[in-house]
Image (cartoon, rainbow, N blue to C red; front, side, top):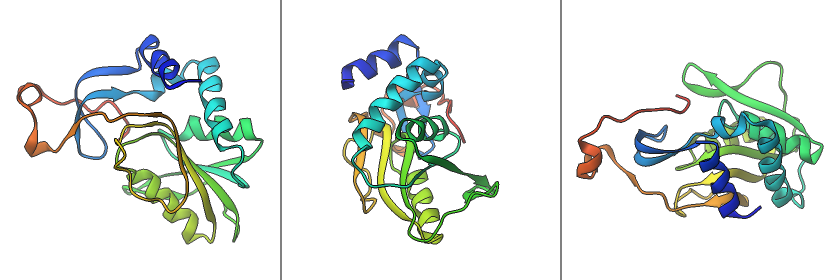
Length: 189
């Protein structure tokens, strides 16, 4: 699938929103990729995540991990496409943790999957969990990289289906059109 086809699916499913948004990263933006709206369509989810899986197929990995909630469907679908086990990290007292009896074996190689990356905060937290349990992060994958090339170095390959330089703004540096409208936070908290 091409980047244009994937953006077309976001538009077709009304998952690419325009307005004034407060992102989980704390930045403000005029656009928001509401992946849950896109991924609610199971055939689209399977297609898009299979395309991401193909970009990761050559990476030597044993399992897939994703941060909940945004990366859950992406991680599960990519793992299914690759025939791998999928686990997830979830919030507990504001931080991501491994729960539900999930385990990471020493030396186990992981793909870390997320839906959208702006600054990479949840990905970095998930990587830290894998490493703290003795695992190895083989690669990071996401549907949308909206960082404009400003994602931190995760210490492994970073793969995405869509790469965009979507404008983002610090709260104290909003352009007039955004400063005059209240921000909404449609994503996970």
